[in-house]
Image (tube, rainbow, N blue to C red; front, side, top):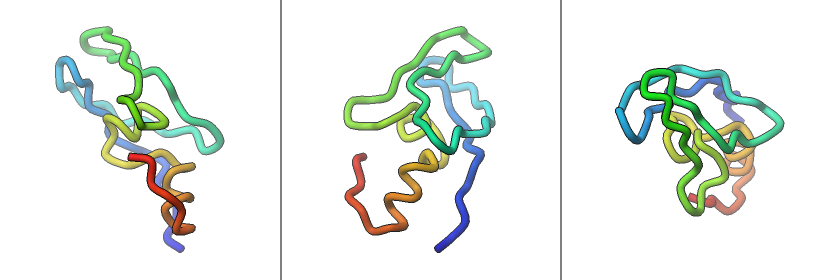
Length: 74
């Protein structure tokens, strides 16, 4: 199994600014406040968190699920 990636570059869906963040390993992050335009974003329908919707890497719980061959929720 590949190691978990713990950082993701998240792109604001409004202004397209990018910010690299460390993802929580034990929970999903439901809100992202853009430091550039202050827009607060929520996950897209069907995604578990903002990293799965707007990040360059899926959240750690989803990475683990994919590695285990589980159903992908995206």
